[in-house]
Length: 149
Image (cartoon, rainbow, N blue to C red; front, side, top):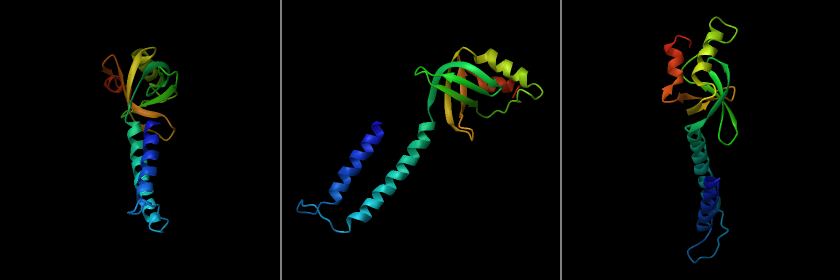
């Protein structure tokens, strides 16, 4: 929200400078529009970059459910539930061989515990993808080391 306010203030201040001639009077010449388009283009690029950077964040909270060996749900301090897909691993689905063992292993490791998730982005299902740390232990790596992912 602060970033959005800053962008709008900067945009309107810059647009006013561009639209003012040397004597301080506002100019309504058509030269204003090319400058406006350049500004809009730059802010579009900046906004897209900030969206990508927004995913590079740390999420903290308590694990409240385990979907399978590589997907958990974290309840944040703000009471938001965030579905997390553990990055860099692919565990068997519950119905596949070792699927229940993989889910149970992840459950023993993180269920009911406070975790930190280094988010890397979103997958095609809208889940946050990231590395899950519980008590200084990398849960992603633990699943892999146990042969369950």
